[in-house]
Image (cartoon, rainbow, N blue to C red; front, side):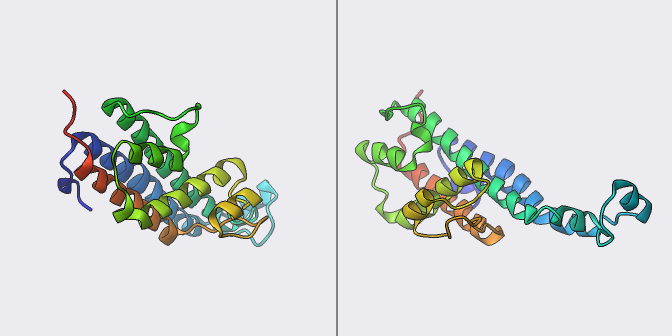
Length: 198
């Protein structure tokens, strides 16, 4: 999706933000860090002075002593994506005067936000599959923030995926599906939101 496909300046600003800050910056970092670390060779004297085991030859070897740390970068991409969506929801409700739900965490509750937008007259049935991907992203954000990505009973029951007690796997493909779903959502609202209020 390209920025020239958007007509509403409010939606375009949020598209630009999620594309540059979350996708182009964070996602690029997540996809390049492992490769970069594999190329960062640690000299023997540094390894010895740090007390690292003999198998540590690169920064990749060092980081892998602590588990699957690179997957955490993709979790951060999902966390950032959902934060972008939350800000979009908040600013959209503020700009257009849509009725908000109760509680401080309203904009973190995707289903509540969608419900209020449907009450305001939006029909999301044409992009339901994108809503489902965004819903999964919000659940991943929750366990990414509160459980270091480990699936709990609540996540498993709400999503029907993952193994309780294990890290929910995120890679570049699964993140991209969520990013694409969110940009589809933005594009849909770009065509449905009224013209910007003066």
